[in-house]
Amino acid sequence: MAIEITQLTQAQPFQPVGHHGVGPVHLFGGEHYDGAVTVALSHYLPGGRADLSPVPAETLYVVLTGTLTLIDADGASYVLEPFDSARLTAGTVRGVENRTNLPAGMLVIRPNPAASSASAPEVRS
View: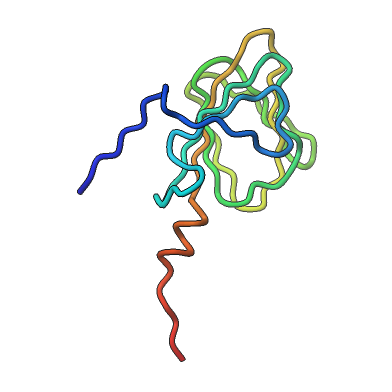
């Protein structure tokens, strides 16, 4: 069994499509990452948002700091504060907004599609 550590100073920034005023970093994930689960730390500036779009796989959100509003496809909104969490099934349409004047931080956890295809059993016919 191995232990893999990511220091925050080593986390790799990235810019997901449809995110505005959001500064995410991969704690575990990114190019050449082969772990089963990715973990990103997303910093939402005041007014920062993720556009309404479907999540590619089951996704867990855990708000660490600040307040974020989660919006569903029907326009319903859910206010998440520190240590509140949300589970979204694959394909769930959602938006995220920081409607406050303070920054907010959130962990985003989901399966790594590169790992699942690499570890899928070979099918023989």
